[in-house]
Length: 458
Image (cartoon, rainbow, N blue to C red; front, side):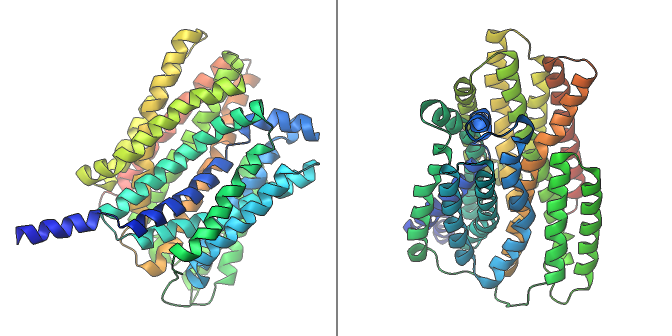
């Protein structure tokens, strides 16, 4: 009997060759989409000079991708349940290739912004589809935890790698190659997916909840726009639209997001943890970029190379996360990962004007925080998607993907507002960085406490 149980356990945690190929395909698409969120950040001055963007309009190069990516993710995740997840993934990859080609060939600000919108729509199409294909391809338990661990690793590593790639490509070739690098990856996914991935959709072919889809999409667009542009009317509109969405879902015969799913403690607690970790880690990358370039006078290439250390730490954290989850459980791992991220971030208040001493701190402390960040990422994905049937995985992974993209979008504007407030009061760049670091750390630690409270009885 013991031998049979051992064999069953090994079988559950050992991937087949086909599963490995599926994993490589899906992770490759996710990694490339994550890279796109940050690859142009260090290239913004070069793009502005090359295409004639004014300084105040450079932010729209990032926002043009963030808006559709965050706004349409939940809708497209649910549509994937109805029409097919593989179909949505392939559509997203084709659109990514078209947008990337247009961006690389852009000769005007309008053409480049249109290309970034296309990339954002591609991310909204492909990210939840790829994640739901991942969760439905691997059974819940150690095998799925391992797959989600690798997925979380590449998501965070992709965001960090984007800064590295952006610096290298801009300095050595041209910012246009930050778009062109997507083409071979998109082509590989489009060619390989039909032979590797069976079509996957929910068992019930319900009608699409159009009122719910319109209100949540408009609400998310208004929220992201309001936060990124500091527009209080847009934020107020977002609150009203999302409240209307909640009321619509309570009464809809075939809701876009069933209230029973939205009110599950694991879904709420998991996504809150994901929102906190993504929002504050993306803003920390921004803070470190500001510190390295404006205080220590690093070049974009040198800044990118510093971030490579964070990429290595993130990779280690992703490999460690499934083991931590297996030992303490996904909920404790989520809270612990957030605490480690918050404590490490707070320690950066010791950064100073001394280049050599501060560089050691910049390399070591964020690396520890990156491990906590990855443990939190994997744990939130496991928590937010566990215990749900395959028919609702598109919704669950759509929520998880939206959490990720909203977090990445909102972090920098929120922390920028803190720095601007310090500057308005007459503080230096370093003083602004110190204040923003303390705010960042406090939000993560408070978030860890809130997640622990929500998940206490789930």
